[in-house]
Length: 136
Image (cartoon, rainbow, N blue to C red; front, side, top):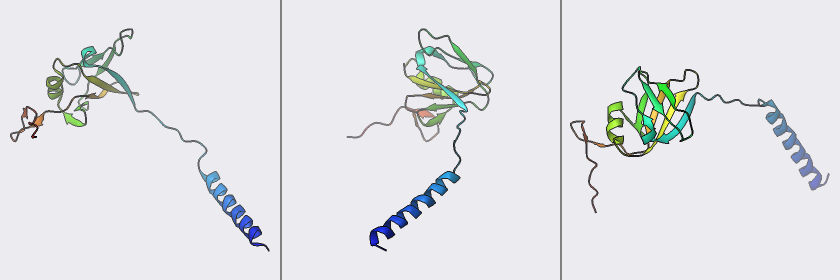
């Protein structure tokens, strides 16, 4: 046999074996969303007072308000920093920042709230303090 024929046979065997492996894979994959995200400005969000109360958000000027019940498992974040509801309220306090509200697709309960504002720096006594000064 010529060396080209051997290469062609080797290529055909490689392709047929990879095709069999590919065919063994499931034909489709399905993804299930567990949360729904709503983005809004903090000026159009009324935060809950605690578990059992309601968050109200108006996603756009022409949109109907949406409400989600907070639970004991609802979490709050300043960007990636997990905070308490009180800390979230204090950090937003009068600022207009982006807020993403996540709710359960199944129960429509409030699962988490993320504000696009940095978390305050923690003092050694674990109380929030002013951001640390920048040294130049």
